[in-house]
Amino acid sequence: MNRATKIVQTSIIGIIVNVVLAAIKAVIGTMVNSIAITLDAVNNLSDALSSVITIIGTKLSQKAEDKKHPMGYGRVEYLSTTVISVIVLYAGVTSLVEAVKKIIEPQAADYSVVSLVIVAIAVVVKILLGLYFKGVGSKEKSDALIASGQDALFDGVISTATLIAGILYLTTNIGIESYLAGVISIVIIKSGVEMLSDTISKILGERIESEISKEIKRCVATVDGVQGAYDLVLHNYGPDRTVGSIHIEVDDKLTASEIDEITRKIERKVYKEFNVNIVGVGIYAVNTGDDEAAKIRADVNRIVTAFEYVIQMHGFYIKMDDLYMQFDVIVDFAAPSMKEVYHEVISAVQEHYPDYKLQVILDRDISD
Image (cartoon, rainbow, N blue to C red):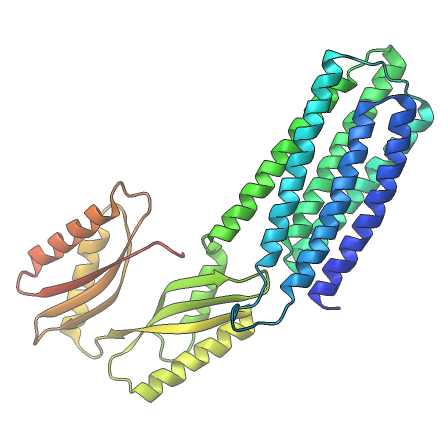
């Protein structure tokens, strides 16, 4: 079963379960005059709608690439997750408004043991559904399913609180459900804001996970002829489509055909092991068989990395006959001024090597 089919099937299960729960809770909420149970029913309907949107988003994301969108439509899934987040947020706000109205003009609830038993069953179902959604979502890399699963688990907690309020009312005749409805609404709003924030962050483009970045660079460094791997950049065009570029250090005596062979090996190896398309491999030449060049490189590296916010120096190459030196320096985002550190680095190296013309590139701390 492919990824899209699994996501659609899981979402259909969610629609059926949520519609059934919503109907049962709506009936019980109306019978016992409980705003908390009624709002819980509305929340189940919003969850069913979220599953519908997940299906639509998954289907649209499977559209074939075309001239206008050569990288496909995979990012539609992030948009569907955004819509789900907005729905959750809207449900929370409207629920809060209704809860405040009931606090101002309270109405006594009329719980029964049977109604609370049904709510208890709904709690178990909702928690199991949430765990199922999150499990499938994590396996299939579906943010929409993960968001729906997180929301379902919140619903389970909310329904548990409703259940406790009902038991408290039956045993002590103390009614707190209007206030509980307010708390429920705030939890829903918080969940919606967090989901929306996470999704927008992914759309904007997030830093590569440290472990994945390090593993890809280690993988590239194992290819014969590669002396170092740097500047890994990945672009996400959907949960199952990632393209990127990387820089490698190679022997400056290699021919164009030998470098071409190395880059093709890198592309095949990274795709096979990580399902990542490396579409660009930049080349840093390394002085080979020159002890003096190696000594100067080590000295420059010592000078550069002595600065507090400098993370790394790479891409070093020197032409001693031409008195020319080049390298890249990565400065931490935490630096008060990256450009200031960059200029200080240049000044320090220039002071030690005044006769050399320097070509220094300021690199961003894109990946670990």
